[in-house]
Image (tube, one colour):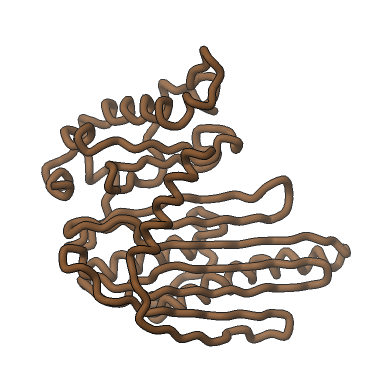
Length: 302
């Protein structure tokens, strides 16, 4: 859906503007004759004094695997924290490590467990993720080669900061997996952090417990007005679109994201709507949601 594309594009554009290049280094990590790989890291300049004191490196890893008539491509790219307020840097690194370790299954099962050394190096973490994705493809391809089966796999992960103030930092994480068939699957999520403590902000620690029903009603109405209504036939309602009863709508599985426009709520593919509707999303202005927040969270928006 085009509206979700706008939200994601905004996050990516913000991440690109987050840093300025100061230098670079690259090297190959491929170890097999049937693979080619590259890792690229770029260091950023110092950031504005009013922004969270965090510095990032631009990390990129890409590799391919061929076995018989099977081909898999994997890519990991993003802005990785290298210095700054220690609790914030540690928290973002831990979150990114968790996201990358589950980027294929998107479940409680990990492809790999990031080590302390992985988390200390964006290039090393990206390589560990990429190699784990290709290893999952290798496992499938062993049987496909025996059957002379032809298939293409594709794995892609990207991440980076999309919003920052002196009190907040928001990171986005996008993942795409194609394992054959009519189409691939995407994940578009993120995480906001208290820039001074590194605390991960979720619906559970942002909003007052007794305001959940009111918040859900606001999200339901905003989804209709901002995301679905424009492309629906006259007379249509959410009941005609959603895979669930609109009255039983819950908040998204992923946490709300702080942005310059307000809090962004993103539902994943198939979470509430058919694949054709993409990732339904909406933005609630701070003027609307602030009365529903606890005191600590509300202060972060001032």
